[in-house]
Length: 73
Image 1 (cartoon, rainbow, N blue to C red):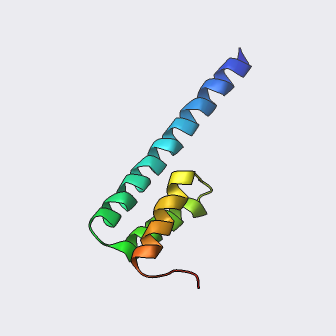
Image 2: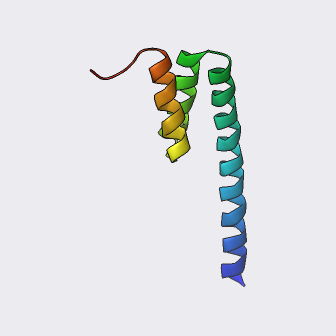
């Protein structure tokens, strides 16, 4: 019984954190869509700093850098 309650609470916590990051990701994407690439980069990096990683996140971050000509030589 205690294990079930613990797992339920853990699932709720993960859901809340995931939703929070989803909002941050959407905000960063909106900044990118509005040509605010520096701000989008900062928003994507804040998500990374919180320990969340995904291929889409890195792809969008790289594109924002590309739009600002931050391209490796």
